[in-house]
Image 1 (cartoon, rainbow, N blue to C red):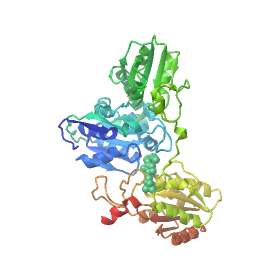
Image 2: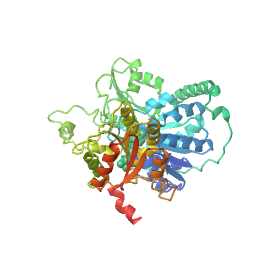
Image 3: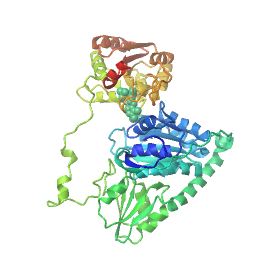
Image 4: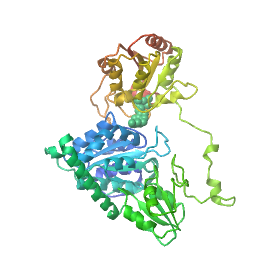
Length: 527
Ligand SMILES: Cc1ncc(C[n+]2csc(CCOP(=O)(O)OP(=O)(O)O)c2C)c(N)n1
């Protein structure tokens, strides 16, 4: 679909619907950093949006870029996965104080069940932390409608608005009616120091303005229409938010039903809903936030705090299925996950990362601090070549921390995109403080883990156009290590020799393992 204004109906994933909603809302910029399950929003926009859709180096840069566009009066969509919001949390916590100009929607896709993430944090807590509104869709149509509404709300309250998706919204498809595309806002960059300078003299006043906005939002939440009673007339009730609203349907129709789609939480609506019920179930992916409120107003609340649902992992569609008996049809469909063979992701056959790990093994004993990317898969057997993994950009700093304790033969393994994302400050710090570490940058010419997005090292933009190009070797040299060398990981013996030499030396040594991801190598050859 292009960003035309002709209404039609089609099947869309939640992510496509969000992209379409943003186009219909008249965005002028879409900016993000890849991360499952959010990645395909920018990819869709890069293909289908005639305006500016771009990848940047990390989530902090993405949010700050979107804030810049908003200051210029335009609407901007910023996308990331949940852990990306940790990286973007610094600008987030202050931009809510200052406020925005053009509408700014922050799409954060959570990963309950941690299917492809290092944790399963709940972004609604960030919305609460930053005092910003948050919309939570329960299907693709709502994802599109809420995206559009988020921009209007952002301009009405002069606040960024979070749209919280989860894997099952982002990646499953339901019918979506497209609508009319709004014209872009005119460019208008006005100086407004009282709301553009996060400096001490502005903080208390801005904080007060934010608290006032939040109080207004709490009222708006009750009357917004996003938090509404869907069914009455029974003695039991379910409160369900986002995707869990779909799971609530599995419980059958003999429950009153309150659907939550907007935060701040509509306390009054919840209080009124639970009145007179015998039992209240609360279904929400992530932390028991709504449940905590429901418990304030009812004695018999069933959910995660009561132990009826697990607090860890995904709530999932089966959460409210009635218990199966021998003669229920349902039983045949219920699969015991524990009985299934585990199929963890593995490195692709021919992956250059495998060969690098083989060379590292040949180079002798080493403690390897890891990072996040396809190469993390080297942590599992048969390679078992990575000893730690924490979050993006942590490998070099962890290695340096170990080396400062007088230990040698420590290697940090980091991918090219991760190095650009948050490895560079760690490398400079290690050089500055005279660490003794070997830094292995695995340059496979893309962000492989999230689906082969381009990086500044290839110079191709999200829209597959030619952009500026950055040299990884020059970048590393500028950080000041003792040496920077490039190896071909498929030449295992040669690579092992280089690694063995560097591991025996003091100082910070960088080795770039240069070979494109096997899945894109053929394409790159063709140009
Ligand atoms: C803060 C944060 N943002 C995004 C992600 C999603 N993510 C996982 S690995 C990765 C980058 C992988 O690229 P690279 O370092 O080049 O390694 P490759 O997969 O290409 O081997 C990203 C963006 C994440 N895990 N954490």
